[in-house]
Length: 229
Image (tube, rainbow, N blue to C red):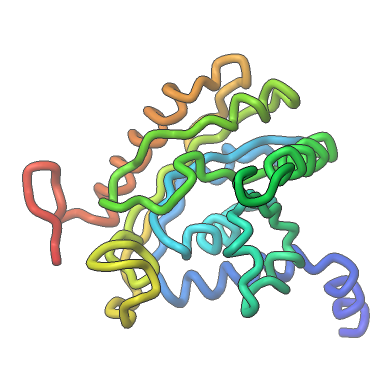
């Protein structure tokens, strides 16, 4: 027991990831597919659609390897969760208009992580979806891959639209939780070589994976039928 406690203190990320894995399985009926597409060793970038404030926890708990998240500084500096974000190695970023040099510093930290063989997780939409659908991917990924050409693993997340941490029926976190053990699906796709990882291709692949995940997580919602309220 003492040896296990010492190891957890020295390298807390695997323990935290395991605890998060247990948490999300308690909160949701989770279906995972394609986790083996994340390489067992070596650097990679994972990109996923952004549905709710729970996305990072679901992604982090589902991944077979620790993920370094690029995240908005205001969320990173949350007084309740900053200790956790620091512990798991999240990378904060703010617009240069508000904090000159923030983007450069964040990209340098991403580069250091990738050159150390870590996996970095991005939400290329840059914000939570306002309507449940995948939004246009923003620039930034091309800059990362130009500096560090690593494989990109696309992922599609479904089932969290409508939760109290999403923007459905009002701003996220402004509503009381109404669902428990909801279906949530996270599907990973095959790695895409950096030379082919264009923004439009990655966006299309994430959209396709989300559509497949919708088939299990939201079986009663189809493109021709209204979303459940």
